[in-house]
Image 1 (tube, rainbow, N blue to C red):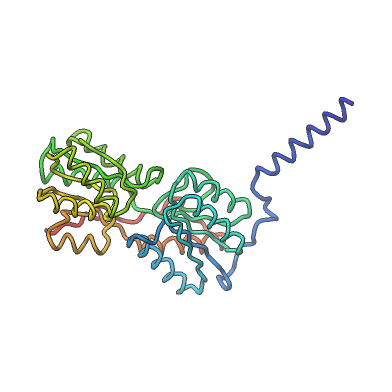
Image 2 (cartoon, rainbow, N blue to C red):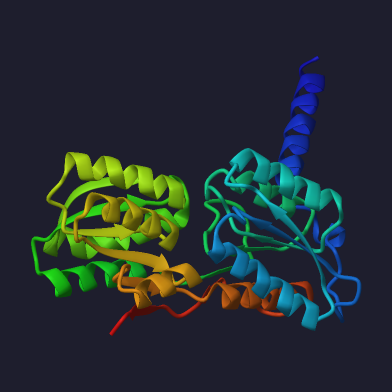
Length: 305
């Protein structure tokens, strides 16, 4: 009886271990010599943001050059929807996945699902906390946060009272931009308020109105993206105050606002280039070519000067 029980337990452990592992090499899709009939799935956190619309455009343009079909799904900033979207893309038989995560931790289960069926994953702008990702294509968000803090300190001096509008909680971009900002701000500035506005313009307006009521002597604002920065400017204009605002992304509306003398600066990314490089990385991964784990995209500080 003991021998039977031991045999049963051994088999159980083997089955559990096998279930937890990625598929064996023979079960993985073969490397592709060319990219004919290739389908790529693109899961975007939200298309209600010009930055991600540009990112999507970069993906589609590069894919078209290579004769690759792209299936695009919009998570609408809903983590559960994004996970379901990715599972649907896998069911549709995509050869590779490009994911711009809504939440870097929550998306990990979807990344692991792709790993289990041998579909390469590229993350764009935001990373995944777990799972095997072939490449992460993004700007250096930590460096960008530091650039914003340095600019505020240079323009207004050390000890300036600053409000920080944070992005979606759980997104790697939120963590990294905040980290970079505080590497400088904690030494040179006085951050008197910080609150999430979920990378959203309307929420940026509402959050900024509340911050101004509680902290009427604020001198500057750093927003983790341009959408929140533009919302903050609406609230500031309504209050009649003059407050320096710095955004992040370099989207078209932000650049117009800088020219008009409203937004002081933005840490500009290149979302179309992020999309282009992600497709190139996916194509290389499908052909078993070496892909860099991190693919950086340059940043620049844009001001009116």
